[in-house]
Length: 324
Length: 248
Image (cartoon, rainbow over the protein chains, first blue to last red):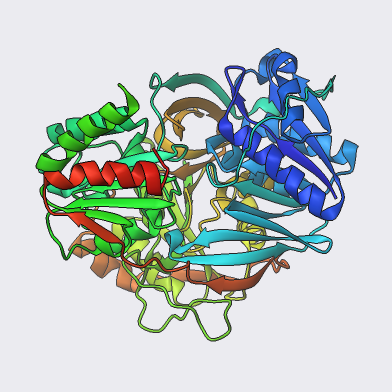
């Protein structure tokens, strides 16, 4: 099967998910005997696009126009659908990021395709693909099959291996897709990025704090630990509801469902909604003074002690290890 | 201003999920169903827009009779009118969006609101699909919205930041936590909602494109190792993370 892998970039830099999407497309194409076409959309992306060859794309297409510099739900989805039709491809893979999740439903409608969002595994089965995705906030997993001619999947960041580039730079084909003004009816006009802030949805390590930290200012030690270990700060619903932390940091069923390599839960007891949102993490560390806290039931490593005693010591020890 | 909000009836987030005997659905026994939490935020935003600009708020839900409870909750919060697109056959995001889009087209709203996702299927697709079907602009995962003179400026959450998006009405928005703090229904509202009629319509039938092959519980994790009970355990924890788990 012919697969279009949509590689997301912001400010002309690929996101890690871009490589994950291309590599996953490669894996599926290898299983089914097919071709991977990477697609990059933006203002001026021709110069960066070639890199995707190293991750398994046979061809790399760049669709670039000054107006595509900023994300537009309507214009980006039009580009993807047009490229798919031109190439007569049958599968589109996008990252399940803010961009991908916004764009994919429009792509699906344009191509009369079924959609599988936020997938955590894809497997070729004959001419089709079986996708696994978490539902009910992670309390269950579903295996789905899309029966329309075209299939759209978004892949949860940080779950699929990106692997290393083999150094092959693909030739970049610049493709012109004419876009009338009417394709920009939804348009981003400004992007504000908290400088260097790592988002929980994309982080490989997350350090989360809960109500047991007693006050908003005590999150300083969570930030310090996250800084030392190179992770993002997460929060339980209780502390977000209390206004201590922004909702963008909330992990759990009404926050973000995450699967990092390492999840450190500090002073979080582990409500069912929280556990559902993080229990697919590869390794879980729990620090809580209540030995009966449910979080210990899913943790790989636990320390039953006061977070105020443990966390600063842990930060120091990690700094020592990493030579910081 | 005609404001519409599409809402869903879902298992309470506190519910424990068990798999039904068919291996494809959940076992609904003993599960409390509630108004989807993100839809509450969507309803609140519509009510605020009405308070500011005038007009009416219509809540729409696609599903069986059980959804009436959720529609009544919406009316108790202050929604003027409730419509049940009565059909409880299994659907995927596409066929849900098709039914909603077809009905919305008939009533031509200025604003169409959704929650950013339904906490059952977690597909986060229906709102934006409806926008595409109707040829309308959309802003998903909105955390801020201002509407002036028929034009919307909204902020949506992106990784590590925000994106400001402009769109002319009519438009579709999906609500994320942080957009507002939903009100509790007043006692008066709850009483009034009991006697308000719910309009029933027959939605468009559409074949789902997505087939559920299996539904299962995630692999269960067994409780791990308690490394210690005071700060002397820290060294060992770091060693385990570094040498055994190899995550740092």
